[in-house]
Amino acid sequence: MKITFLTPGTGSYYCGACMRDNALANALIQSGHEAELLPMYLPLMLDEESEGLDSDSPVFFGGINIYLQQKFSIFRHSPEWIDRLLNKPGLLQSVAKRSHMTSARDHGEMTFEMLRLDGADFEKELRKLYSWINDHGRPDVLCLSTALQSGFAREIKKQWNIPVVCCFQGEDSFLDSLPDEFRERCWTLMAERCRDADLLLGPSNFYGRLMEKRLGLDEGVIKTQYNGINLEGFRGGKSLNVPAIGYLARMCEAKGLALLVDAFIHLRVQLGNENCRLEVAGAMTQGDLPLVESLKKKLSNSGLADAVGWRPNISREEKQDFLSGLSVFTVPVQYEEAFGLYVIEAMASAVPVVQPNRSAFPELIESSGGGVCVDMDSPEELAAAWHDLLEKPERLVEIGDRGRSGVEQHFSMEAMKDSFITAMESLVQSISKNE
Image (cartoon, rainbow, N blue to C red; front, side, top):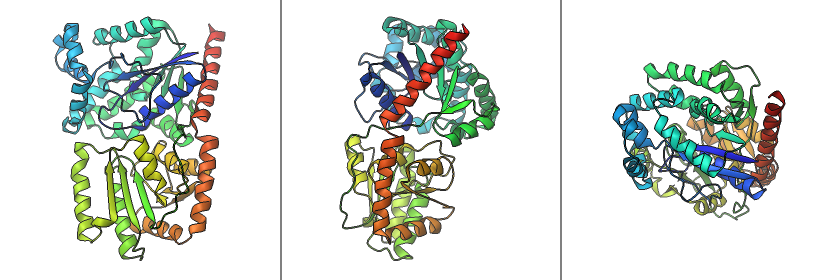
């Protein structure tokens, strides 16, 4: 079976959706299937080698080209050499680093246009995509990495009449952040466009039910496809002289970084864990820098600047080394998290996780046994949960070992690949019977 993934890139930082698609494509290829990863909008930032990404593959629907075509219709007919120039990876990456400077209105307008995806307006870009796929072999199934791409389903099916799968990856928080003039329009349009897909996949039962309600879909229509990771290189069992609490996610307000720092200050100053460290790692863009600097200042004012380590934009190997040096792991997300790949990576390193008692976290931790879910509406609640675990070293080891076993069973790359192939084969057979 051949499967083609249309995967939006970030151009400047690692993201869970890109890494999920890459890990899945690699696993499919290693199992004898064909899989191709086609970058959309911006270059892909991957933390491991990709067997599905052709070294000659362009970025389709390049972000600069699409922006200009949306603003000035003359660019919909620009010559190919101009398109190639504007699609150069270096230029796209440079622009991506300044994405925080793009207006909210532009984000809303671009999102709406990609969901609407008028074939006449974007004929040139669709033609490039179709030409590449025809030259490299039409797939048995085409997979859209995120429901924000659901506008492509109708166009793809008109071109080839092949099954289209649409995945959900946390779109609700992005759509809710759009300006009023685009928010409801985009929600309504995405609900329409998702119905054009042959199969909808969500990363957790929680998120599937949430998006069914938000989109007005029948309950159970979004099937659950758990994300998985390549376990190679993740290791635990390092003996720690100093306890360390870790955070691995984008360094932003939405991921709860400010709450994390406040909880750490409370743990050290009020609860007496005076030798504990805080280690922070993950993606950091220019737009995140003001928050990080303000938190560093707060820590300095509390006399704890030297007790906190900061490691932005680390590689896969650096990430694995980082995780192996932790006692406890937390990302106190402030929104409804669809999955949380960072939780799986921590548990794969035999690190107990302490997560909010909501979103997908109870589901993931119940499946793996690798942590605890607690209410953390305040820094004091989170600090108390850390303190309780750090006082029981034997329990830390027990939970960590259980988490590693749970990830091997439920959230490995092999587990993800097997369930994905089962779903794809069932989809293809079902469509064939109905033709």
